[in-house]
Length: 170
Image (cartoon, rainbow, N blue to C red):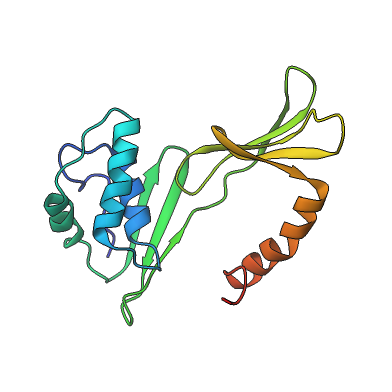
């Protein structure tokens, strides 16, 4: 059964904020509704938008039945929410957007892409003179990583690619 979540979103919420809320709430970790609502409130506030009451969102969530796949789209990111009828587990998968490469005004290589929540991100060579480094992350909150940092992250990223997790909990 296919449900158009964008067309069936609550009145008074943009498709972007609604999809942000859904992608947060419908994660396999099953976060608390109140926590997801609070995060959606922050996103709506940042976008200078309003958000319906938590009870309104709860009523609309009740319309999502675990009986098929639901496709939604937000910006440049398409999401496929796969709802398993047997155990009602939910997967959220975003097809990876291609990394678009360009050069900065100073000639440094820069790759831009969109993350799972539709946020613009980048990876860029750093101008740091004392060591090789890159900038990586969401535009307004990037990490400055050395080659050693990147090398330390590679096994975790590869494990995540292979298994869906960075490793065993301690």
